[in-house]
Length: 390
Image (cartoon, rainbow, N blue to C red; front, side, top):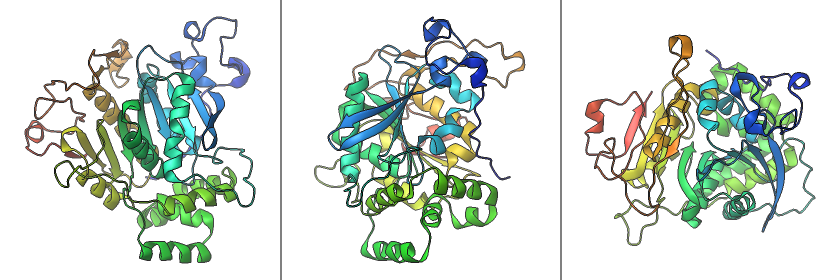
């Protein structure tokens, strides 16, 4: 069944107003909109943050919650935070999670809706520089650390960010990440494709598999229209060129090479079983520490699992948070009457440098993210990296 991309707002602005504050002057925590959503979720706050490599457009949903990390997102090429993440973050069960965190959506330079076109000759930031822009965002809002959710190019940027600034990253959800730079053959092929295909077509072939392009026409055509009309095409071409010229992500599984570097935080890798990025995600999985990595391969999903399977991804994300030391007592809307209370998420006291014990950990030294589809037998396997089809 073809998935629908919906950007329809779940409220009436005429009824709920347009300010991020309470309608009658009360604090946002005291005023709830539809389904208990605070005005800051209904009306996100937009910011332009100055960084060493230019302005960065950032959208904030919610407000900081004590010492909890912020959830920081970074979108893929051809998209912006709305096109990439609206379906996922507007999913009803996901809002039960995000109301306990501040969410920080980052748009790559010039990719946000209504962005001004960069001048001719503008040097777009490199992938390393895009990662180096993020500490300015963290500092601007006073975040202690973040949990990153990235897709494609955004996943690469967040992974690079975590490698350079490990103390600022609590965990990562990386969808469709490719840790490898393009070789000469791939680079030449992309150049030829750029001469013979339109920019939206090149982006669509990056986002979707050939099977999706043929069979899921409704979703593909929706994104074709949005990519061509919402994102500035000149700016998009610069971003795409920079992503295609990326270098290998300098990571290796510990013990495989001398002084190997890898991601030190918990990581959940996500890819659809019919996604063009599957090979790259598998490669990335082979280069990460298996004791803190979960590999989630989603059945009946293609290049945009956060759009086509938001429910499954939400469930996996909930367990990922629990495995990191956040306990969620969330309302299960599938239960009759919906009477299960929604309590706060409580961060377990711990040192950021100390290991945790957890009954869900295979080796008993770290918490693990898991999904309902895991069996007891799977948890007992020696291989700490879990491949899950759900």
